[in-house]
Image (cartoon, rainbow, N blue to C red; front, side):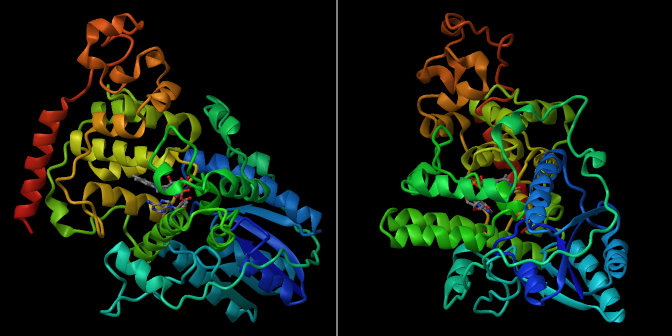
Length: 476
Ligand code: FAD
C-alpha cells in the first residue's frame, strides 16, 4: 500500500510524528505539499513568508529525494487536492500534523471526512507544539488567562516525549507535480529579497545548524542578553519554528540538555524555555479565539478612538519616524525579514500609543514582511503590546523610545547598522538626534533633510495616548 504524508507547517524529516506514522505503517511513502490560498478563511502567506517557503520546499524536496521519496507540489484548495492525490496514488493512509488556526482545522476536518468516507485511514498527530491545544487547563477548567498560570499548568507533570529520528523510508512512485519555480514565490521585479538571501538559509539542515550555534554561544547569557538588539544572544530560530523545519521539542530538549550538562546556567535555560512557552500560549489562545488577529480580546477596546492616517502609517512602515531605535527596527524588518523582539515591542508600542494607529495595521504589515510571520504569535503579541490582549501590559505603560534605545542599544551599534545616515553620530546623541541639531551637522546630518525630525513629540504623544486609553477604561 501507499501512505501520503501531507506536509504543512512541519517541513522536516526528523521529529515529525506524521512522517513517522506514515513510515511505521510499512507502506511506500509519497510526500505532498499544497499551497492553499483558496480555502475560505485561510490567510494567504505574506511576501517574506512566501520567499521563505520557496527555500524551505526546495530543501525539503532535496532531503526527501535522498530517501527516495517524491514530493508532489500542488496549488489550490486542499480540501479537493488532498483526496485527489490520495486517490491517484492509490493511498490507503494519509498522515498529517495538527494545525492551530480555525480555518485550517476546518480544511483538515473536511479532508479527513472525505478520506474516511473513501475508506482511507487518517492519522493526525501533534508536531507543531509541545502541548495539544485544549489540554492545558486552569483551575476553572478552561485555558488559563495569564501566561504564568498557563506555563505552570502546562509543565506540571508534563510528558513531551522524546524526539523521533528520521524514519527509514520507502518511496512510492512519483505523481505529476507542479514546478516550484513556476509558482514564482520569490520576488523578481523589484527584487526586494537581497537582504533576506544574505541573512537566511531556509531548510531543516540550516535549522539544526542554527540551533547548534545558539547552544554553543547564544544560550549562556540569554536571560539578560535577549533584550539587547546589539548583541547575538537570541536564537533566530523563529522562521524555522514557524515553518516547522525544527520542532519545539527538538529545541526545548536540546536547551534542557545543555543546562543539565552544566554548560549553560539554569537561569538562562529557564528564560529560553519560557519564550518557547509564550509560543505555546499564543497558539492555545488562537485555538480558543479563532479571530485573534482581528478582534480585541478585551471588548473594552472595541470603542477605542484609533486614528486613521495613512501618511503616518507609511512613515512607520518605511522607518522614517525620526526615532532612531524605531526606524532601525522597521528597516531591519524590511531588509532582513526579521526584527529583534525588544525592538518589535518598541515599534509596536510606538504605532499603537505614540501614533494611536490600530494594532491591526501593524499586525498586517508584520504579516507581509516577517519571515517568521505566524498567525498566533503575531496577533497575540500585537494585542499584548496594544493592551487589548490576554495578560496584556497595562495600557499606561508607554515605552519611551529614547530611554529604550539608550538602555538596550547603549553604544548605538544597532541603530548605526540599520540607519546608516546616523553612522557617525556619537552614542550620547544617537537616540535623540534632535536634542542637538547644530552639533549634528558636524557628523554630516542635517535634521529634516538627511534624517527626519521626530514625527511626534514624546511627551505630547504620551499624554494623548493616556487620554485615549482612559476613555477605554471608562467603558469597562
Ligand atoms: P528567541 O528569543 O530565541 O526565542 C525562541 C523562540 O521562542 C522563538 O523563535 C519563538 O518561536 C518563541 N518566542 C519568543 N518570544 C516569543 C513571544 N513573545 N511570543 C511567542 N513566541 C515567542 N514571533 C513569531 O514567531 N512570529 C511572529 O509573527 C511574531 N510577531 C510578533 C509581533 C510583535 C509585535 C511582537 C512584540 C513579537 C512578535 N513575535 C513573533 C515574538 C518574538 O518577537 C519572536 O518570536 C522572536 O523575536 C523571534 O526571535 P528568536 O527566534 O531569536 O527568539
